Length: 307
Ligand code: ADP
Image (cartoon, rainbow, N blue to C red; front, side, top):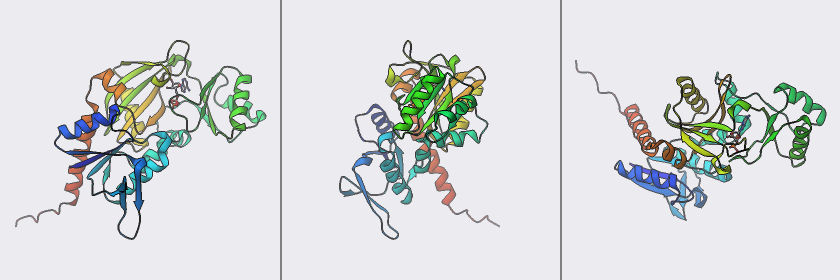
């Protein structure tokens, strides 16, 4: 098969590992930089150009779309979908995973636990009292809707600090979520890597001393962790609710059970493969092989039964 990894840099750990796994399994690997693509649309022939060259057909793509280029990246994925190429995560599922409000709305339809969260557009101080009450009062976590890597995530200990933080974000015309603070998580969270409805690796990330955010980009450290059955099922259900075949599910361990924080559609491989020693890149390629085989069977006409 011809399989392309959509990535802005062929030297990134995740990109290199995916290329390695594709080739090890006897397929042809390509790296397409989605920020260097343009399309042509006319009746019946959606075309994609990469670095000005028309691309031929790929059987499958593995999108690794950074948050800063979601719009363009998902448009490239959509263009491949129009050509009948299989994408490990669909353009629509990547798009919805990038919005914290939309994700929580989708998750709240299911029975997986999520932290109590409220959203209101630029609330005034009088409304803020009501919103804080709805999530159980301070301390609360205030989050910018499209933040990543822990940026735009603020812990407000008191009503006063919550109000001034909300006022500052509203002044900047930033939409925010107000969320109950899960203190017992102790500055740690769990990343469960889900491929095709199975947890293939999991790690615990602990924020550095005095930091409530566990993001590795903020100096957090990771270690391998074995999840309970309930935690595994929660991660699997969350990936399914977001319609993601490949997902990095972030979970807070609370006194009332696992709570989903976020479901990432382009989860990095370096942290999880290093912590778990599991070859997750190969699991992703195996998922492509199985999905393509299932597709083929779907399109193969049934033989007439012999009389
Ligand atoms: P980002 O997408 O920017 O990583 P998150 O919502 O995942 O933002 O938050 C970053 C980190 O902050 C999480 O990994 C977690 O450690 C901590 N955190 C976020 N929300 C809460 C919360 N409600 N209670 C306790 N800790 C939280």
